[in-house]
Length: 348
Ligand SMILES: Cc1ncc(COP(=O)(O)O)c(C=O)c1O
Image (cartoon, rainbow, N blue to C red; front, side, top):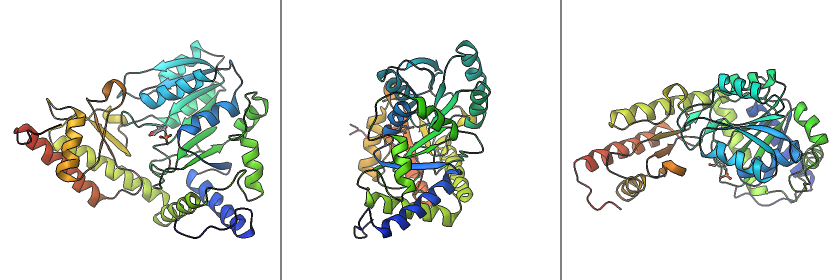
């Protein structure tokens, strides 16, 4: 990322960007289009909505946590007719529930799904969900912000229509890029979608990509970073990267249980990129995080929404390896034991 700037309309950029898109298609397991904009993951919600729909279009939003909720909120803000399928936090969205919701709402044009619900540490069973949605002829729109690059995600094999992610999660870069894949069915929807759009217009981005450029000034430094990350992933092997995350997820969950803490997610759907657990009894998540930060130099996160103070979330995605995680987990165990023995009175 410290490389010097090059002209983003010149031949050197064109060659670089062409290769970058090729590698990006490989790690998304798609032959289709991968498009990239400066932005954060949240832009993906808006890109999907303004490019694939018209005001008033009916969609089914699946909500199992705060990111599913936000997708539904953004769709509502743009004036889509949003039908919500909600399950309790910590539980997955199941294919049966989606199938039933689609029976009740046969007119929906698309189903909105957060693949990995970062607020609860649940990975929804995306291949099964996609199969049910496809049987009903609706589009499958996927927020893969905390899954892409970390856990299995097969854009073409699972027949996913629009999938977006942000550079800062399992792509292990700083924040600053939003990356999206577009299926042929999504392109067909795009042609009739009537929302006004400029910066996020898919066709503009596709044309530019075919010309080896980005529509606006390229976020060159971020593209250098993403390119380096793709090289690392391809050198390790995408399936080895997935296996590493699977091992990190399993290690985290077993150490959390060994520390006498309670895992939050339904164990059959526990995420391998982020783990949510309850803080020690009598301690808020914020206080527990202060202890981890102050005493051990470990950063974790609180829960979100109604669970802000009753959940702690530990990320283990992207540039995450066993030695770092072992250190973080032993800090969690030590802090838990000290809190339990009243040895950290200055909490807060
Ligand atoms: C599943 C999911 N979707 C969307 C977002 C929003 O992404 P950003 O914060 O990059 O805008 C996040 C961020 O954590 C996320 O985890």
